Each structure stands twice: as C-alpha cells, then as structure tokens.
Length: 215
Image 1 (tube, rainbow, N blue to C red):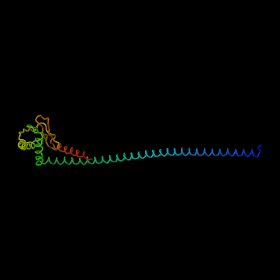
Image 2 (tube, rainbow, N blue to C red; image 1 turned 135 degrees about the vertical axis):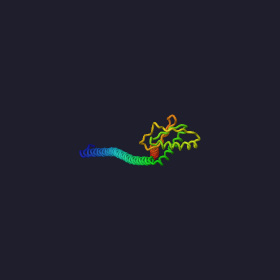
Image 3 (spheres, one colour; image 1 turned 120 degrees about the vertical axis):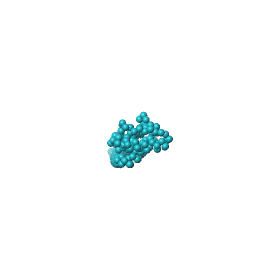
C-alpha cells in the first residue's frame, strides 16, 4: 500500500513533535541541573562568606577584649602607682616628723639622758661581751658616761657577769646626727648601732615590710 503525501506529512509532523518534546525535556533537565548547581555554588559561597564574616568579627571581638584588658591593666597600674606614691609620701612625712621629735628629745637633757640609758643598756645586752666600746657624739660624752655608770651594775645583776666599758674619745659620731650611740665588741668587728637615725631606719624598714605584705 503506497503512502500518500498526507500520510508522509503526518509522520514527519509526529517525528518533529517527538524531537521537539525530547529537546524540551532535555532543556528542562539541563536548566534544572544548572539551577541545582547554581544553588549549590551559591550556598557554598554564602557559607564561605558567612564563615569569613564570623571569623572577622570574632577576631575584632578578641582585639577589642584584649585592648580592654590592656586599658584596665594600665589603669590599675596607674592607680597602684598613685597609691604607692601617696604611701611613700606619707611614710616620708612620718619619718621626718619622727626625726624632728627625736631631735627635740636630744635637746631636752632629762629626756635625752633617759633615752641614752636605754640605748646603752640595750647595746650591752645585744653584745653580751666582757669588754665593749661606746661611741657617741662629742657633745654627748658626759651624758653617755653617766648612762654607762648607771647601766653597769644593772647589767652585772642581770647577766651575772662583769663588763668593762670604754668610751671612744678619738672617733666620735657626727655632731649633725640626732644622737644615740654605737656599741662595739672588744676587737671592733661587731657593732650595735643604736643611734637615733638607726632607730628611724629600723622603723622605715618595718613600714616597708608591712607595705610589702599588702595585696
């Protein structure tokens, strides 16, 4: 049976329609795949940028926190320095006041002689030597001699031992100091410094030690 032109044309149209349909489906498939890949790449890029942004702000936050810590540390150090300066000034004022008061005591014969007796006797007790030498200011020789004479029997009674005391008449303590004595053993290698300045220095050391214990 021979095909008519109409039948041929119909088959051609069917084939063209089939090819168009396949082509359209392929296009849709390609579009869908491209859209999927685009969305995947877009998501990857967005996530990458999100991570970068988070890392950036985390870094900034750490920098700000570190800067804040440095500022707080600097402020704390400045405050501590101010406290230390104020404390040192207060200690200096107290020590100066103590020097002035001790200098006033040295100008009062009655009070100074009593003070010398205590300083001399303390020197005897700290050395516990049979022979000692006492050094003092030249202007204090008479009062120191009186203090020695008063303390020898007291010392003998307390330690049950004799003591020979010499007042150094060749080497005196500087006249500009507030007063007091230095007591040496017989060979001069051991010294007990009981000058008024040494007592002030002892007070200053104790104050520094107490300050060092403060948090």
